[in-house]
Image (cartoon, rainbow, N blue to C red):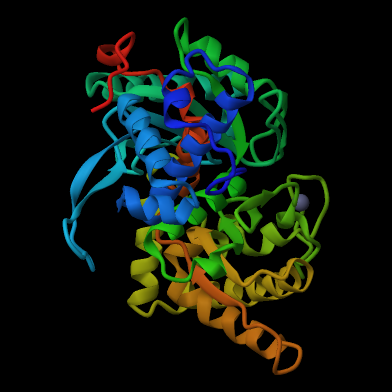
Amino acid sequence: MQQGPGGGLTSAASIMAGYPDAADKGSTRRNNLGVVLRLLRENGAQSRTRIAAAAGLPKATVSVLVTELIQRGLVREGELDRAGAVGRPHRMVELDGSRVCGIGAEVGVDHVTVMALDLSGAVVHEQRRGISIPELSPQEALREVAVMVRAALRVVGARGLGVAGVVLVTQGAVDTETGTVRLATNFGWRDVPAAAELRALLGPGAPPVQVENDAESGALAEYISADVDSDDDADTRELLYVTGGIGVGGAKLSDGRLLRGSEIGHMHLDRLERPCACGRTGCWEMAVGLQALLDAAADRTDPVHDRTADLAQRLGELLARADGGDPRTLAALAGIADDLARGLGILVDVLNPSRIVLGGYFAVFGRYLVDTAQQLLDQRRIGPVAQRVVVAVSTLGLSNAARGGACLALEGIFHDPTTAQLRPEVTGDRQSR
Ligand SMILES: [Zn+2]
């Protein structure tokens, strides 16, 4: 937000007259529309009075902004605000999920997950298929993704939702500018122009397609959902997200900004010096990745190794064995817990987060992993004044990277709500309600 009360804000009249945008008045309006929309995402339904107080904008300005957001189908009138009301209660305003959605498509080593989220964060569509990606060429894999994205487009189209974009989420190093997967060692992908290829497969009229790294999109999903649901979002603002699959990835959010570029799965921490798909030996993901757990817990002929079967079911089977006291599964998890804790200790020293959220398969086995990590981090604290790092598990499930992709697809609207078209019935007729 660039303007405060009395700071020369665009007047109500000029905001309404601002189509098409005229220079910086238009950009102030767009910026303020985004501020209001993001406040509703972070704090939930609120009255215009509360929005004005939180945004530091005059209430008359907020009323005009809300009217435009309603006309764009992005917010709607909700319940009456009766909390602590003196005098006449005000009508609450909330995000409207009926108009637009974002689609995230996660390609994992052994699955593809597609999720559509509406603007209010509700899941409109979700599908996961067990697919062994390393056995396919990138083009074959993207064809499978396209089939699933088209199914999602049909579902959301039937509900009358527009699609802001599709974000393809993969492991490894991605170039978000060009939509290229630079190197995903566990898939065998190198310099794959994945965004362009997926867009071509989706055909004419397809929404825009971007590419994002799985740990980074997962971290964003944690951040956005924590803003809505949790009381300690001060902690969440320095959040380190570590996700376990066949590969291990991580991303840090600092004050809501995503810090990119860490390849934490390849820290040299595997005592057994197992060869890694990256070409080195002894990478952390060889010690704590899903394959290490599966190899330690079960023989190769055991169905939990079957990559074409649903991952959630395979992990559920292992969890049932652990909960039933199976010694081999418990020993395997104890080994993972030790190696995970060692790596997290190093990451805390380097990145200094206040909160660590474990995602992917780590979250499924959280009760066997978190205590070991928390104890080690507590022991390693330097001096009594050092801040305690809290270790928690993601509550968003195995789809959280796909969810983050869908959140990212909607980010453009949260930053410039004018990218969402006006409802057809108000185009050319901008009367306010
Ligand atoms: Zn490696």
